[in-house]
Image (cartoon, rainbow, N blue to C red):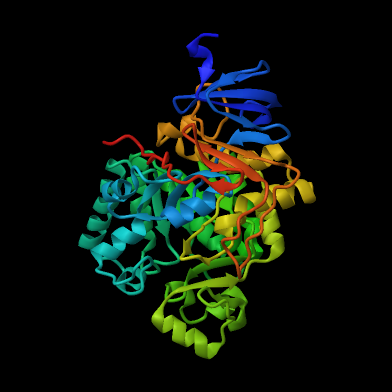
Length: 461
């Protein structure tokens, strides 16, 4: 056998599933130079080998909504099968600096949007750390500030940001016109707008239906593609209706997509605009449905007031289970985590989202086919971004000539273990994860001393 037929890494005897081509068969996979070079029934020779017998071999999971962009979070996400983690909702202000900070020492691939929130915070001198707490949350922009905001978002797109991120529920002073203007900037660069919509549930005014209508209209007006983030946590009791709105918009030719995570609780900053006066009535919950991340305690009026003053993350138990199920099972929704851990504290979705779907919805309940679940985790996210960032046309699939970002798991044992009290517990059954042809998880454990992750960007302009 000549050297050209010896691969860097061979995956032997696994059930290779590629939702785009329909491949679902036992095959051997040969990888060299970070790329899938062969998928064959014949034996392949490699310098390194992973025995994938009785395991599923598929494209690595692409998380469109990952706030925890550091080594702690990359490691936790890798153990859940994630090979590319993207900050597309809040996004970033200085795109060049953000990518430079991670290049060369990331376990997984990474990427970010041009963020309306951080740009607005900078323009308005808002003192918030991650989310706005002052003018950027509440004040209408002046004409000159709006021009600065638009210029800041455009600068990020020129520097290769993957999309435009908007968190309209966090920037309540953002006028409807400002939102449309930001969509116009996105449209100019063929960038999708990844939006946390303004409203929740069925209660008017500013229900989830009204809020979804605002951004669908902005997409129709400007021509910018729209991606509504975590449809289940903003839709709440209106999730089925908002999903129907997306389906009907798509039937009429609009480029509208969405995502969800499979949990009945969210997590956000307690000092954000989401907890302004009237939140109990709006969300249909009281203090006891709030869980303080640092201690795990449930809140009351006194502790709520105290923590609202100091700031920090709070878990919000507010999403009906039927809303979560409707979102996970809808053919419209990609799976994304909205994850963020800080020093081991946070929400279980960072560590368990993908294994939960595979273990519970696919194996235990039989409500999702394996191929449909994997499509939601890899192919759909790649398709959302590939028009703007052609690099994604080589991701989200397991085919010859495509990037060797690969997740290998045991379909009989895969399951999540992370909880609200112990959010970093890794899943069972995600055996091996490969990024750019390099093992980053081996036998369920993170491989030390490797950093094959690269920043994925759109072309610079």
